[in-house]
Length: 114
Image (tube, rainbow, N blue to C red; front, side, top):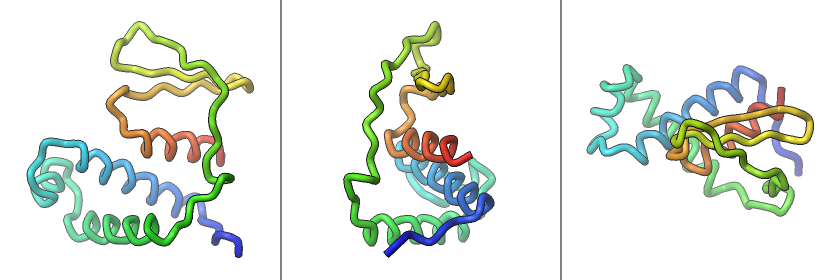
């Protein structure tokens, strides 16, 4: 059974909320309500997406095809807080070293779909 195709807008919203939820999970903010106030987010939307993404995560059965190991060396940058990766096709991505691995994967997947 194939996965349903998401529109660009749906992927964008999903990626946005994945990043915000990941940021909250790795923040020192004690409550989701405070995090939402600090980030100017709707608390109801935050909780709805948190639940939606959690349900999707538990329903998805990872397969070998879902993970692609990059055989590309990571390039050090002048900024010690950035990690940079250049792909064989010339695409170069950079991200904060504190970014959770799931968010890096989501970033790479989002860029690769364009």
